[in-house]
Image (cartoon, rainbow, N blue to C red):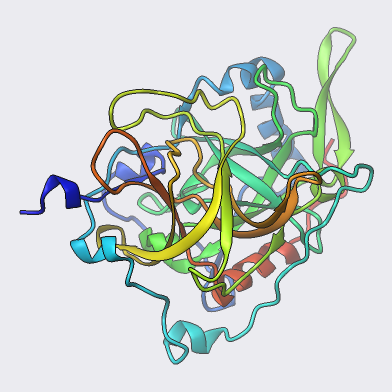
Length: 366
């Protein structure tokens, strides 16, 4: 029996949807070998349907809904605690399929010297609303959001989230100073779509032009505010960074309960874990074979999908994406979560990102 001191608990920061029964199918795969692309809201009519769902009154109450979390997962083996795992070797199948990936440079907003790339995604599975953390990523279409795979797609039901929106820098009272951006399509790894493999618990969502609600003649109307990156900027993208060779800061909106029952965060404010070094980690029960862990981080549910940022400039609030919050860990089985982990962002991640960056959306959805 593993002693309490060595009992490492990995809690998946994903929706209760992942607790549902066995898989029922696989997402529609795009031509590239490892990328699945799934539509969300494709037409102007689809966008308006989603927008109508998220009227100001609904948004004001959205933070009171559940942050995505299914509860604790099974404990990894003692070898997981040693952090000895690593990514596939260069000769592996994945490495042969995609050998290179070009990183994206950070981009500032057009009309501001300070970026506001981080925010929340709100969505629904079935009849229940959830939310996660997310960030805008620099892309040639100026319209890409990064988050956790479990914040946009349920592999057990083979279904995407419904009524999915990204709100950068949201106010606690439901105001959306930088606009509301409706998801157009999901780009993700086929092994997240097909079997919920936590090595690929990330997604890049192409979003439509943003809008805000404006009061006119006693009712709310949609007012176009332009493309996401133009308004808030976009994080760069760093790939193939070997753990222990760099430092990173993790960000998100924590809200869930800690292992000891306390709830120090309410999910209304963006929080960051102190910048620090990373290491490899594994969680075999979740198919996580090449995870990257950041220690001394007490994040709780709500931070799912929040960005890991390298080279964060606190004055301009910009840097480069190198991961997303996927799992939170209670390594010493004591009172508080003490680490968070991300899938390893490698060349395959770059291929998924490029698919999202190549998607187009209508020029006018309002």
